Length: 98
Image (cartoon, rainbow, N blue to C red; front, side, top):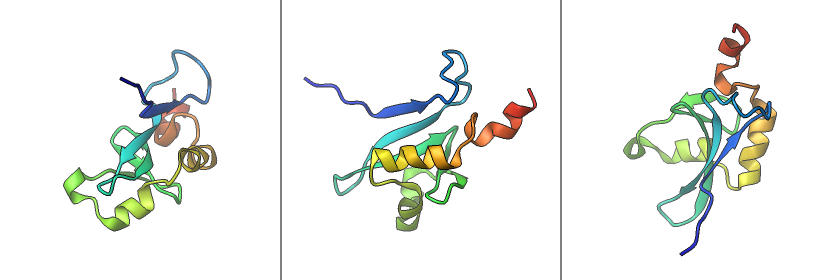
């Protein structure tokens, strides 16, 4: 038996109690057996362009969706977070009002 990481949580403040609705990188096995990575937060995915959209149910995901919202490597997904996300992810404006 072996264990494998399948989800990583971004914690920009490094606080142990500041997770709220975390931004995660999820390891996603594709139908062809390859591995891609998704950046997710509360039902939405981050695109390669840095835009958040709600993720459709699996049977409604098109090839275009996969091209826009899946990353080839974990590092590509992590770089997208670092380049496009603010603390609190897509909820950063709500977080600023607290």
